[in-house]
Image (cartoon, rainbow, N blue to C red; front, side):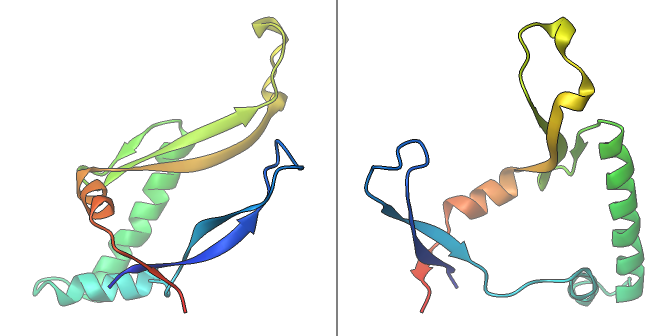
Length: 128
């Protein structure tokens, strides 16, 4: 199986006069819900049910939210890590900075070794 992509024509926001170029953009081929994920994990195990897995994944979501909200990096071993990232408006001096200048926040994910290996071996196919 390959990751599919479509081509999207985009202009250069820094130079509106420059000719537009085509760029690849990934196209999803579906989605995996938490419920489906729990069933798939349970199918690979003879000791836990999909209900048990779903309960653990729901708790994992709550714990991840709490620790990220406390400013911690949450590491999942070889899977990767989650962290809060911020962007803000700039000011001339540190004394002039105020938290109200923070304009955006997001959760960033940094893949671990297993996902980096997967990324390095991906195959690509243009979507039909």
